[in-house]
Each structure stands twice: as structure tokens, then as C-alpha cells.
Length: 433
Ligand code: HOZ
Image (tube, rainbow, N blue to C red):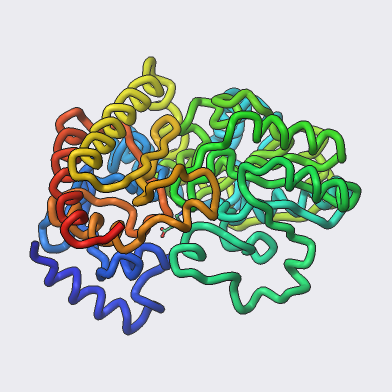
């Protein structure tokens, strides 16, 4: 596989961009590689600067559920751009987007648009603190809620990939009110709330953890969080930046039937453009300025290009049978990967919920941060490299998800399974378990 042009671009990038990338995980360091540089993408295919073609399972880390360059999304952006790229003044599309979100996400009565998932979680947390008048927040080990200071404790994603325990630049005082507990362990939450329940503003959780690989909630975990938050008067915040509009039209809260007080969104609602949102019950959202005194603002919030792309993407997701088709495709892929792992005698645990999944190189079930950490990251690196050679692009870290989308056809899934068989043989030859 020729990567000459990508390597050359990476060298150039390293001179002017820290680590050559604008977000750490994509550097490829965790899988012993330098990154491919993308030239163009359409459907489920990426083409790199050397002309290599890949079946893509990263989908820009989730937003592109309908595939790259979907004609309806591209046309919506083109049309919106011809009428202006940003106004900083209200426009009708913002209302239509808010209506779509309120219609589909069961717990959201009002929503505020921002520009990234990080902004959404930071703002939701500020709102929860402002609404309750309390300071403490409970999060879960291995859950990642963006890179806002208060939530950068025992995080997943890049923090986990590169083994960074916290981040210099986040003073202890800033995280002194953040408590991070084991995911899927309700008894710990109960214990901690017994001690600090009256000081706790919020419990924030990824309803399916998707930044330490994919870890589904155990039956009763989300329901238990709801019950405990009600008991102590804390707000339950679902970070649905990844699960929103992916698991179901109403996200994980619809899928699992548990309603949070506040929800953070991003990714799919921007159709591949930068976006985030947070919403919830009207009485809470009305605490935001200018109605209330909790402050948050943004020059590009409700940006017309992002609203147009997002509305087009949400329109595509209204088509009949879309979610069933995503589930079927993912189940087919997961079954194929399971069989390939068994045939190669490589221990792999494939977790998935709807179209979100992850294969851990591990012998044990992966149901929390501790068990995720036991997976063999060297084996993942070998697997990643071999899959890439065979034209399949996976997340360049064991601790991220794969995203199945509407653009993946059966042929693509079969080719992926075939590639996995070869890659797993290579893992077997090179790695000890
Ligand atoms: N934190 C993102 C994945 N969960 C990675 C974003 C990126 O590298 O683009």
C-alpha cells in the first residue's frame, strides 16, 4: 500500500500543527502509524491522497450516518451557502431544527444550538448547576464528554487512548466538585449520593458508553440513575452526542425508555458540519439567558450551513425502515466478525448497540472501564494496520467505536468480514494472548 503522499503531508503538517493533527486520536500513534490524508469521500468510501480507497467505519466519528457527500446534504449546504454563510441574527432554519429535535427526542421541550459536543456538555452542566444551585457532578470512568475542564476526569477517547490521567492546565480546584465513578455500578452511585446527594447538581452519563470502545449499559443501570437522581433532586444528563438520532429517532432515551432531564446532542444533527445542542424540560431550559440568568452564547450558534446540513440529514432519517436497516446490517457485520475471530482463534469481544459497535481484543466481557483497559491494544494495532492494507478504515484506537451507516451495502460488509479474517490471522501470528 502506497502512503507516500500521506506521509509527506503529515511531515508538512507536523511543522505547523501540534502532532500534525487537529484532534489527537486521528494521529494514528495508538496504532503505530502515521495518518492517511483524505482527498475525498462519497457514500461509505474514503479516497486518500495516494489514491487508496477504503470502506469507512469512522464516518467522521459518527455524524455521517447516511454516508459521505450525501446528495441531499450537499445540495442543502450549497443552497444555504448561496444565501449567506453566517448571520449572527435569527433565521427560520433554527426554528425548524429545534422543532425536529423537540418532536423526536422524548425528553426535550426546548433546545439551544451550540457548535460542538464539548460546548453542549459544558453548557448543560452549567445549567444544571445554575438550576439546582448545587456544585457537585457525578460522571463515569471511561465516559468522555468533550474536553471541557470540569469533565476531563478519568475520561475516555483520546485521554484514554494516550493514557493521560487528566490534563495539565486543569487546576485541581476546577475538578474538585467532579466525582468519577465506575460505569454500570449503581451501588457506587447510591453510596456516593448518600454522602453528597444534597450537594449534587447532576449525574452525566453516556447512555451507551462509546469512548472506551462501546460499552452498553447493564439492564437497570440507566433506570437506577433516573431513580437516584429523582430521590436526591439532581438532574440526570444524557450525553447523546454519539447516540442521538443513531440508536433511534429519539436516541438512547427512546431506545432504553429512560428519560433524562437534560440531553446533549451533536454529530448527526449537524450532518457533518460543526454543531452541538443541549435541551430538556422547559422549566430548566428557561433558566438560560435571556429568559434566566445562566449565561451561554455563541457567534456561530445556529449557523445556517450547519442547520441546513443537519435538517437534510434528519430528513433522510425519517425514511421508512432506516433504523431497522441499520440494525440488520450491524447484526450481520457483528456476526461475521464473531465468526472470523473464532475461526482465527483470536479472543475478541464484539459489543454493539444498534449501529454502534466495537471489537475488543479480550477474553473477558467488557462492561466497564476496568475491563475495557484489559484489552490487548497491540493486537488492535496489528488488526488496524492489516485492515487498512485491505481497504477498511477503522478508528485508529481500540477505545473508539465503529459506525455502520446507510451507505454500507452487503458487499461492503462481506468485504469487511473477509478482510477481518485475513487481519485476524495476522494478529494470531504476531500477538500473544
Ligand atoms: N473524540 C473523538 C472521538 N470520540 C475524536 C475526534 C477526532 O479525532 O476527530
